[in-house]
Length: 380
Ligand SMILES: Cc1cc2nc3c(=O)[nH]c(=O)nc-3n(C[C@H](O)[C@H](O)[C@H](O)COP(=O)(O)OP(=O)(O)OC[C@H]3O[C@@H](n4cnc5c(N)ncnc54)[C@H](O)[C@@H]3O)c2cc1C
Image 1 (spheres, rainbow, N blue to C red):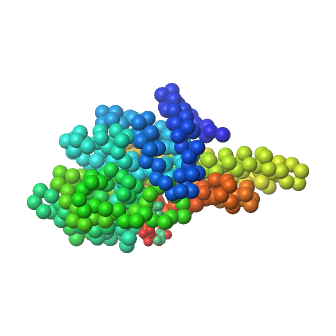
Image 2: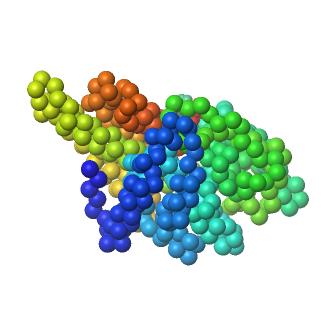
C-alpha cells in the first residue's frame, strides 16, 4: 500500500506520482537480481537523473528541481522503498553537491553545479578514513599546496560510489591544526593518481558499491578548493546535517516496504484455521510496525520543515536520523518475524531489508554519534 502523503502543492503530488511510476517500472522489477549479483545499477541512476530525481533539492537556476526538503525527502523515500541501495545513492549524490552549493563562489557554482545536477553525473563524498570514522578530525589524508595546485595523498575509506562516481567531494588535511586544519576539494574522477581499491564485501546494500579511494599525488588546481583553507570540516558537517535527513527518509521508505510485505503476507498466510493477521498477537506486531513507520516519517518531515524555513535544524536532523533508522531496524526485524521461516529465506525480500536497515544505524554518523550531537545541543 503506498504511503499516505499530504503534499504541500499539486505539483509536488504529481512529482510523487511520477517518482512512483518510474520506480515501479525501472527499479522494482530488477532490484532482487541487482542485489543478488551485487551489480551497481548505473543505468538506473541515469534514468532517475534524466527525470530530474537526482537534483530535486537544488535551485532551478543551477539545473536543480527547486524543491523544498519536505518534498525531496518524500520522493527519496519512494525511491528507497523500491531499493535502499539506490535511495542511499541518490542521497549521497545530493550530499556530494552540497559543499559546492553552500560554500562555493558564484564562479565555481556557475562552472560546475549545472553539470553535477544534470543527472548525467554521479557524485561521492570522501570524509571517513580507516582510523577516522566517528572522529573525522583525526584524518591523515593531506593536501599540500604546490604553486597553483594542491597535491592530495592518502586514502579515504568507505566511499559510497567509490570507483563509480564522476566526481568526489574530498576532505583533506591542509595543516596540523586539528579540526581547523581540514579543507574541502572537488576532484574529478579522471584526475591522475586517483584510483579505487577493491569494493568492500558487505552484508547489505549489495548493489551500492563501497570502496576506499586511493590518492597517490592527486594534483588539483587550487580553484577546486571549496571555501577557505581550514573550513573543510564545517563544510562537511553542514552537508551531513542535510545528508542525515536523506538517510532518515531512505530508512523510512525501507521500513514502509517491510511493513507492506508483512501485511500482505499476514492476510494470506493461515494458521489455526484463520489468516495470521486475525490473531491479535500478530496483528499488534503489525500495528506497532505501522506506528513506527508513521512516527518516523513525521519526525523527518518536522526536521525538513525547519530546514526549509531557514531555521537551525542540526539537532532535529540527528533526532530524525536516529529515530528513523532505529525504527527501520525494528520494523524490518519484525517483518522477518511476521513471515516466520519464510522470512528467513531469500524467497522473500524481508531478510534483505533487515540487512539493509543495519547500515543505516552506522553511516553518516553512527546512532551513538547522533546521541552525542543531540545531548551536546541540550547541554549548551
Ligand atoms: C556501507 C557504508 C557506506 C559508507 N559510505 C560512506 C561515504 O560515502 N563517505 C564517507 O565518508 N563515509 C562513509 N561510510 C563510513 C561511515 O560513515 C563510518 O563507518 C561511520 O561514521 C563510523 O565510523 P567507523 O566505522 O570508523 O566506526 P568507529 O568510529 O570506529 O566506531 C566504532 C563504534 O564506536 C562507537 N563510538 C565511536 N566514538 C564514540 C563516542 N564518542 N561515543 C560513543 N560511541 C562511540 C561508534 O558508534 C561505533 O559503534 C560508510 C560506511 C559504510 C558501512
